Length: 185
Image (tube, rainbow, N blue to C red; front, side, top):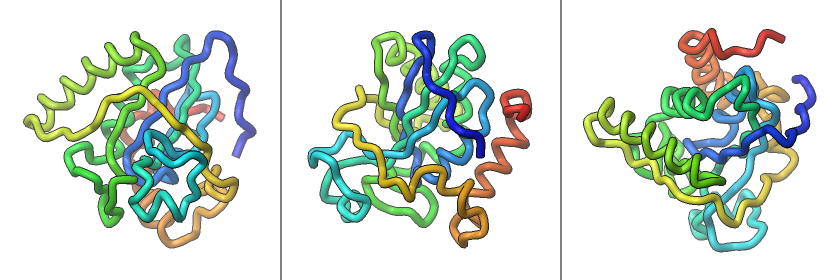
């Protein structure tokens, strides 16, 4: 795993929730133009929640990845297209066997321009999924990074059961579908 590239003054940040953050992180770390991916929790009520607290379903937080990217290399539209292809945006509070509000689908924006573009892409996803998309679109608030052992989890634990069967399938789908957006290194 390469060290994260520091975000620059020209980078953008978006926060996405689509089930387990290990899956999203593993994919977005492979996307050309992504500078850094951090797993965390957002849009809940409890300050600085732990993984166990978030998993209880009582904090209101979603498991998310905070993505810093270079818009000169990767557009927000492309990033959101990847997002909608690697998770099921039609299942409320669930991704596969992961069930609970912490696994909800969400786009947590950082600017009015991001909100406007996300609304466009979300409308397109609604058409593609016959109006069944449940992805929430909200400003990011009350973000907290996940514990250190969650960061770069798949890269450090590819043979762990969940990683080998669930995360690897999402990575493979990304690589097959978005070869043009895959990092060259």
